[in-house]
Image 1 (cartoon, one colour):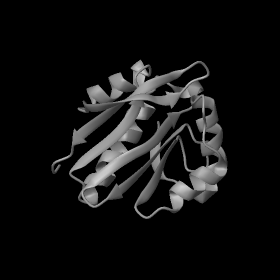
Image 2: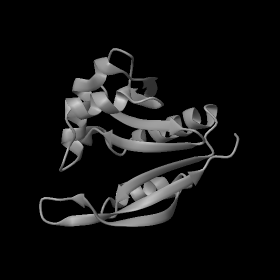
Image 3: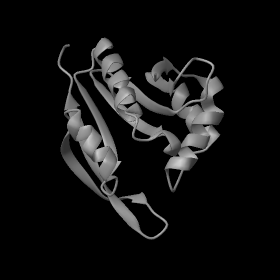
Image 4: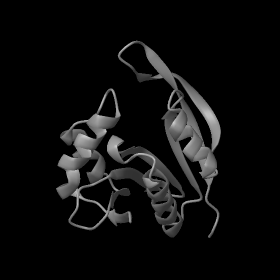
Length: 152
């Protein structure tokens, strides 16, 4: 069974490795450290137990009444197990608890699986950023997606 736990600086090595396995232009330890140190930033990690390896993570921040998923990744070996859904649900719950009325994110338009997940969870496309993500060959647009949180 997958559980969602709060993450922290001790998890950075695993987070960086997961990001490298998931993205063509991954972030390094310094970038993650700076993001985690920002006020209102939260890290949630998916594990089978507190002492086991991280299977996925979501890094998000809350400012005033808006929350933003900064990045999310699931270990390629564990995809298809609803880990991404559990992580997004954890971010939604925490954002609601802190009074956010909206959760936003950006996703590459060629990431069909992630877009499908977000749509199933109630997100809708709110905009588009042309040529936003760098790829080995060219660039691809980002969809800006939003979810109205309301009160649970």
